[in-house]
Length: 362
Image (cartoon, rainbow, N blue to C red):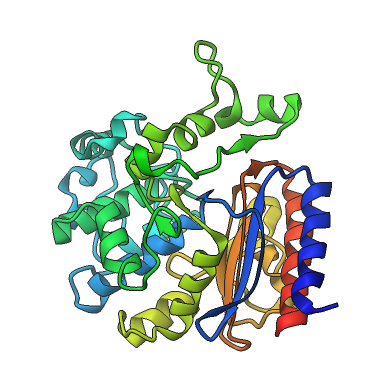
């Protein structure tokens, strides 16, 4: 049996056993797709979206307009209040900015003025640069507004027109952020598949007593909400387009980025710390780094044990994942529309899938 069929059968068995209702995947090398499978559908791309934001900002870093060690307040003066004046761009990109849980009203956050006013009311939740706490959405909004302060271009346009379009990867059937409602017809709804106990213990998944909808669904499933373009979890697209984007991160055949900045952002580990369950975290600017195989026990467990230490990528809600390995030249993307929340199980099957990709195609 050929490798593509082997991988398809392997992924299908896992996805069905885990109760996923829809999934798509793709393996790429040398700028082209080697194998792909699952549903021919458009998915909401969860935290993997943050890696696209990192790449959208690389040109601003290269020309000196965005300084990693500059304060956020240098670009967004309203951010300087309540002890936040010294929080840097690098800290935000590494999730050590210490404002992960500060309130940002939804859907009012679609308005930039509302966001800037909200930043003024935020307080620190720890010591910036020291304390790590994953920022599900706040950090991405801040970086989006910093980019707009520099360029005068709203972040969705910066991503769509200045990164994805030149690569031929922008579109309702490829990758996009903030698509108009009329262009979202193929986007699959996010399905929340949690037990009652899980819902009770996870506030973002608790149904609103008035609407009956949880906060996660409200932000991801409404066409109007998708049109807002959540920068940290709102890109929509296919696994194949995402795998090809990561080929560009590896090779940059079009010369879109400064080579030193691209290499730094994807390979230079700027944060080594411990996160949930005291497991290791290894982060670059917007990406997770695989690092040594023995250390892939925390957020980086989805890499499995067979990619090289140089591999970079990200995981997302429900077991979504994407990575590229400079040693083998492979990139791999897996997307699903189903949110289960058994992290240890997602770690297990995500690592298993990645290991098979690296073994059979490496």
